Image (cartoon, rainbow, N blue to C red; front, side):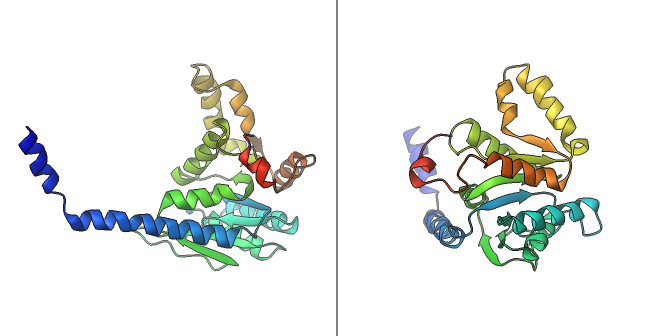
Length: 236
C-alpha cells in the first residue's frame, strides 16, 4: 500500500506544482492593487444585480437612478464592471459627483468592461474580487439578479452574522422579486433553526430609489461612515 501511495505522489507533475505556487503571487498582486486603488474611494456602496437586464429593462433604469442619487450624496459606487445592471450602476455614478468603480472579472465567456468607470480593476479570482466588494463598503444595495447576485448577498450576510465584518446596511430592492426568497427564509430557515429570527434584521426590503438613500443615511445618522482602524478590528 505504501508503494502505491508513493507512486501516486510521484505522478504529480512538477510543472503543476509550480503553476499552483505562482497563483499565490497572482492573488497577492490582486489584493495589493485593490487595496491601493480603493482605499481612497470611501465612503462607497457596493451594488449588485443581473448582467442580463439591458438598457430597455425597467430594472436598468432603476439601477441607474439609484446609483446617480448615491453618487450625488457623496458615495462612490462599486459594481462588477460588466454589462446589464452593472453597467447601469456605473453609468449612474459616472454622471454623478462621486467615483464610479468597476471590479471586472476574467471569465471563460469574456466579460467586457462597461465604459462608465472612473476606476477599473481586473481580477482572475472571484474570492479576491469579493474581498474588495466588502473591504471598503459602507452599504450593500442588491437589485434583482441571478446566482452571482445571490452569492454576494449571502456572502455579506454570513460575514456580518458571524462577526467577521462590521454591520452595514444591506438594502434589497423590490418585494415582487425577493419576496418569495424572504418568505422561505422565514418559513424554513428560521422555523427549522438554521438561522435566528434576529438574523433577518441584517437586511431590509424597499421599493424605490429614495428609500434606498434614506435607509443608508438614517443608518449613519449616529454612526461613523468610515470607522477608525481600532473600530474596524472590533466585532460589529
